[in-house]
Image (cartoon, rainbow, N blue to C red; front, side, top):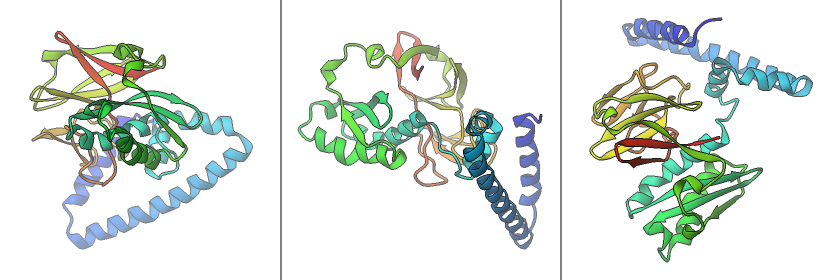
Length: 270
C-alpha cells in the first residue's frame, strides 16, 4: 500500500509543474481536476450508501484508515470527530473571550447531545457571563456540532484542579519549555495525539498536527510572522489563534496547556 507521504509527494510534484504553466493551461488542469473530483465524490457517495445498508462495520473499518478518512473528509463525506469539532468551535470563540480577559475550556462531552464547558477568567464572575455563554460559546459549538443540543456551563468552584475537571481527560508532559521554538513549530506525539507547539513571546500554543484541508501534517510547513503555511497545499494558519487564513470558518484543533516549572503539559482525551 502506498505511504501517505509518498502520495503527498506525488501531488506536490505535479502541483509544482502546473504552477509554471500559463493561466489558460492552468485553467484546463483545474477544470480536469474538478471533473475528476466530482466523479470520485459521486462514486464514494454511492459506495457509502451501499455500505451503510449492507455492511456498516466494514464502512467503519474503512474510515479508520488515515488515507480513506482524509479523502472522505476532503469531499465532506465524513465529519471530524466530535471532540475535534468542539475544540474548533472553542478556538473560534476564544479570541473574543480573551479580549475581555476571559477564556473557556471543555469540561466533558456527555453523549448523545450534551457538552459541559467552564468559563474562566473574567467570564467566570462577570454579570454577563450567562449571555456570553448563550450568544457566543453555545452558538459556536452548535454551528460546528449540530448534534449537540445542550451546552451547560459548569460552576468554577465545582472543580479543584485542572486534572480533575473530567475523568475523560488527563494531563501529559509534552516538552520542556526551552524546546519550543519561536520561528518554527515543535512536533510531538502525546499518547495517540500528534501535536505541534509554537512560541510567541511568553505564549505557547498547541494544535493538532493536521491541516484542516486534507489532514496532512503541518510540522514541515514554513513559519513566518506567526503564520504557518502547510507544505502540502499552502493553507495558512495564525498560530496565535489557530484560525485558517485561507478558508474562512476553519480552525486548527487546539489543546489546553499548562506550564509547571520548565515542563509543558497538554490535556488529552482518553
